[in-house]
Amino acid sequence: MGQLLAEVFTHPGTELSLTDLQRRTGGHAASVHREVLRLIESGILTDRYVGHTRLVKANTVARLYAPLLELIQATYGVQPVLEELLADAEGFEKAFIFGSWAARHAGEPGPEPHDIDVLLVGSIRQRAAAQIAVQATDRLGIEVNVVVVRPETWESGEDPFVRHVQQRPLVELFVNHKDLET
Image 1 (cartoon, rainbow, N blue to C red):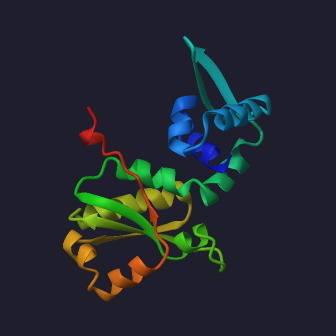
Image 2 (image 1 turned 45 degrees about the vertical axis):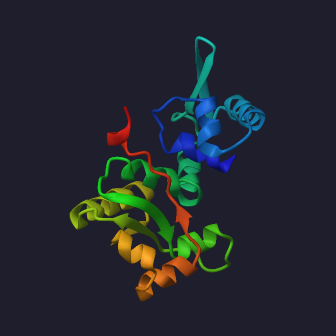
């Protein structure tokens, strides 16, 4: 349910169909439907129908909206926010979260991360990467650092930093580049 809430809450004005939620969360249709019904009944989500399609969105006037948003952003919301911000960026092939946030996400014990480290594989301009870091920091309320590594450096694994990152937990970000969509 956390990933489902993250998809809805990190895009507060966007209506999503149950099919969209199933695809974005990787959940089973019956599970997504059941959880959405519970969230609608509790007033956390609102819904409406367009034909036979049920569209849901976060109920931003609900008493629990603000505290849930804060909790979701700190736990599940990192990936959807980063993926959204990266969708407009050009010049990279792969994106990963690494470091302490990725380690906690993978279940490694340790203190709460104080920042989020993002690695972009490509030739994205440093200025664009820095802008993404600022936007992500503003949206997530935690410092976001973006590192750019050239594809040949990533593939060879010879660079000590790259080798270290590759040996530790990584969370791949799945980015649909908006400029490639038709």
